[in-house]
Amino acid sequence: MPVECSAVFNAGAVRFNGQYLLVLRVEDYARQVNFHVATSRDGVRFEVNPTPIEYPLRAIEQQYGTYRFDMRITPLDGQFYVCHAVWITGLGCMIGMARTRDFVKFEPLPHVSVPFNRNAVLFPEKIRGLYARLERPMDEGGRIWVTYSPDLRFWGDAMPLNLPTQVWNWRKTGAGAMPIKTAAGWLTIYHGTAKTASSENYYLGVALLDLEDPSRVIAAPKKFILHPQEHYECVGQVPNVVFTCGAVETDDGQLNIYYAGADTCVCLAQTSIAALLDFCRA
Image (cartoon, rainbow, N blue to C red; front, side, top):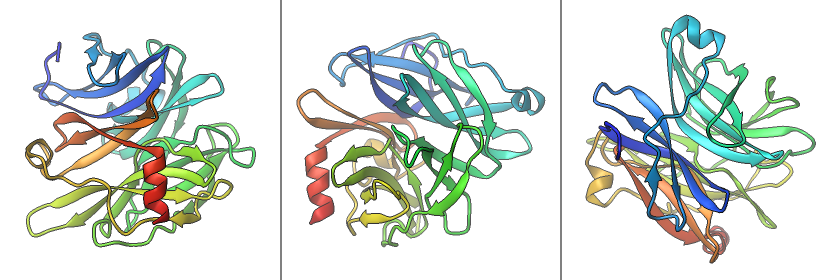
């Protein structure tokens, strides 16, 4: 890393101007968070911009003080929309959104959600004429919900996803990468957690959601697709964590899943959309 960095993780990912682009969550030695853009021609070797994104504060953030983290990126309407968590001092965790055309200048949208809410990602097209996003209110069950908006400001018509409870996701679930549209449904990579004797372990799973009603789960395998097993996934700021905020399809048909290991480093897992669809259908 070309900047002071105690941890870099939970990166949003997208294709931009013929390259792979990550927006990294970078923590310095005071654990202050900045977003940095990283670009790559091959999706593996990245060059990190040492200058952090300049991101204007909303009025509520100016009043209370804040930090942002865990950005997801969605191309939509000729622009790129980002959803991220906003921790506002004394108020809690909320969802913030912004848009950009160049990943240099960002326009924050005025809306922030009520607390406590996080893990939001926007669908790449409207559903039944409305914008749609997945999010995770901090309810007792820790479940993923889908909400809709006519204008990206007012959100409602909320419905929980009927994901089946598995041994590895019984504690909570949360949206991960931007849903991928396929003929079979919205292919969605998400995280699930389960308490163990020593920690709360994070896993990645995959599900197929109905194209017209994403709250309806078409398929959700009982098995996870990734779990902490490498040293860098098990040892770090938060042990036993794999966590994704973005996945990008490559030119040769592979799917690059960029994920965090132990809330400390950025990792890469490779599969394909076809393989994940087969896994859902099995």
